[in-house]
Image 1: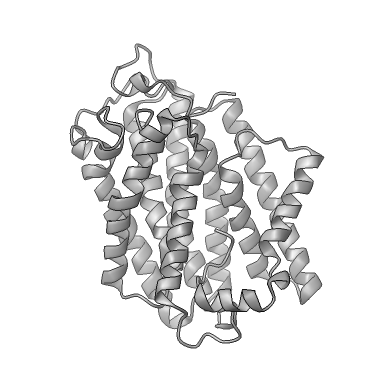
Image 2: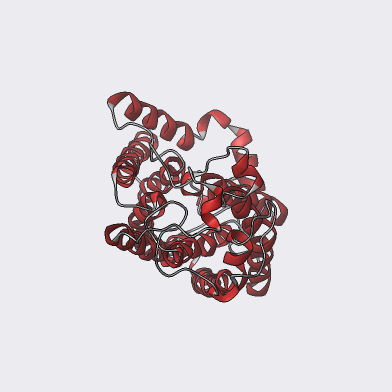
Length: 340
């Protein structure tokens, strides 16, 4: 099964004599819009799980961040990531989308370079925004913006260059990263843990777990999780760069994984105390991250469904950690506390 990452490195610099496929282009454009919709979803999800006094600040951080990060990708990010043949760093030949090919094929797929660049813009915009949940209620706006800009330049662009670009040195070594499992989820997860540890817990945190601080608006968080769930179809299946068997396979796996883990976390919450909207939301969001990198190749059969349930249980099972979990909760206080 071919993927968006099984690419010929020469395709980046050499135009392919073929025409863009309308169905593939429409699907990639729809996926771009779906991923863009995840960003207000992220803002609503995080805002609903914060204290009410900080609801406006997190929405401001996310919405201002997406504008700034999108402009950075348009001005220098895409060029540094996908121009030139240097395996470490790109050049500025495609800054401000100059010299982009607006028709024909790109990277061996029947979509134009312009469509691909816009789709990748959504990845570049949403990835640093994932850090906002880890620093929520503990960092002023200007420092959050500085962190996002610095992290985008120092971490995201190099990683995307090395792995997403066929000329990148990790891609040449055979590293595959479908739907950003490494470039997006792993890098943002590690950075979030480091940031939460460096900042320490929020004032008012008790009982060793962030959920003991009051939520501001669970309906708003539910709307946000719905936007995230919907957007993940574009996030994962759009990475196929075509509307074909790979995209369909990915859509099926994304939906089945989300439903299985949502049900599992709800049952766990009901067994331990009572059904919880936060548990259901975290289950859906957590497994959507987990399934991304393998969504194009795993099977939907009963054997894999049982593995999904076991993964969800392990992700949501805090009790075996005992006091260690309480200490971890104090040290690593991230409000959007799914298993990112």
